Length: 253
Image 1 (spheres, rainbow, N blue to C red):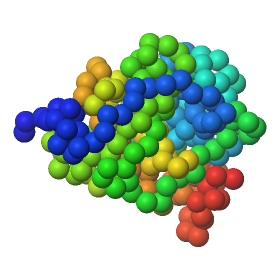
Image 2 (image 1 turned 90 degrees about the vertical axis):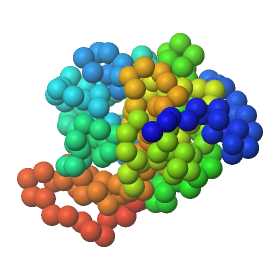
Image 3 (image 1 turned 180 degrees about the vertical axis):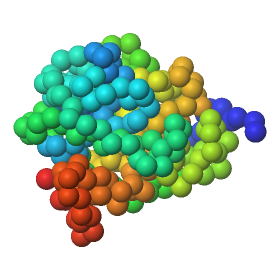
């Protein structure tokens, strides 16, 4: 099908122009973590508890947990506390596409929370069309070629706009989020879409290069029950029994 340009989409929708990205303080977004594979920066993750972060499987192809570390507590992706990884868990339905591209990252040791390190709440509701929020990233366009964390306002598309723009089939677990002035890139993988302090989704890819069709984000609300099970499996790998009553707050403890 013919791909629509983001400028056409936003003009049609009558959206006001959204500002370019801006530098931010880590104290305002203490859940942000930069991800490294073999000491190379590959994208972002978000802290959801003292034990776990959420990221993508795409940047973990063919690697082991000992190849991975995170940096937390600093706006510079290369600085801050180094966090070693004990294990990471992909969704059982993941087939190397944007669909089901979610990864639970387990820390080797619990991290200490403070003004610059903390957890984000998970949204229980899917993002409606036209919802505005912040996308946070160290990717080259959003971060303007620096290693400093930046934020940019983005908005969700309608289902029709999303399917016309995206590079693959848009399932119930995916949504499209974009800004006509800022294109996402491969190093934006895992970048969160945050509304009112809650995680609505994470960037899951498109073309490897920075292009306007890179708009696919996961819907975190669609994975809530599965994440509850993953967290429990990670905590009790030898004697796993699902805890069906586990609440969102218990995930974050």
